[in-house]
Image (cartoon, rainbow over all chains, first blue to last red):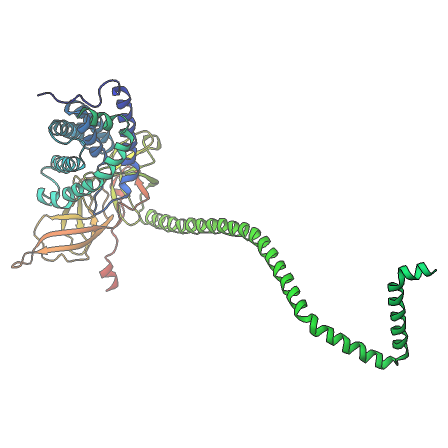
Length: 178
Length: 292
């Protein structure tokens, strides 16, 4: 089965990576400096995870995993989780999303939102501190589900903004190839 | 001569008529002449008044329009000036309110510093946790300012958390509301010891050593110094919710509302003194006992 040419291949590859780097940096700064202020029901959205999913959907599984790993490492440093935990979760999310969206509508908003919901749930389950804390189901109910919902709500506008910056090469190229 | 009269006879006639009229007028007595002048004036006024009024109104309208246009120009400038002034005043008002709030916070912090007789250092919160699952704060003092891992952090009204990592200029605080946090505490009224654990939200839960039926909502919770991390007798918060066993009345689940709102705190106190027992604060009197 012949898949369409990847939208980020040469000659757009290098500029694409630079943009990914710049956008991720901007989103990381937002996540650290601005987002914590907008705490609703004790939770905040994870823009970095959403960005990783957006890029993974565009770049495919392997590159998505790499982007996820690097972003996750930064998040590990910024929070106080075990080093590598967020990196692992984000990298796994990037890989899975990259592989799934290879066979589905990768540029469709609904696909992205479903991926965000799934990966947020996955993140919430993985970061649960086993043995301590409020109990798994309470953790899911009080923290994970609100975060998943918040991420789902934020995903669409963030996707629009990221795609606005990407659009000149990516979407047009993807449409041509598809 | 004849040619002259012939040429200017009309004008000469006019002159003669006028001279005759003037002569007649001169013959009329002064008072009657005045009355005649008044009557004539009135007649003329009757005819002239509408015209005069119209001209006067037109003139004043034109003047008004001119002034209006001029005023528009100046008014526009005035409106712009007033808007600027208004914006400045609004900003000043907001700044003043902010300063008031800051003053209140600092006053409370100072009260806390005076209340707790251990050496503390003030610091400002510069960052919040970027994740829902890890409740941390970043403060603007680090190892260069004498901060060390494990130091206890206090808010305006009570205990806030402890330092978990230190960089040269900043430190990270693990809040007591985080799920990974545990503090040994005592219920002041009953003296019951328990462990205060974070719930990951704005509340903490109490894990009682023994099932307690006496505990009730509003009970004040203090640290008891066990474990050696937190000094004893520091206020933590009050019991906000109790779920009891229907038969025995024992508290199955107890929630505590911390004294400090971890997400709103802006300034903190860090306990910098080495924690030897002599320097630990004395227990505060129970509010209920004091009132009794």
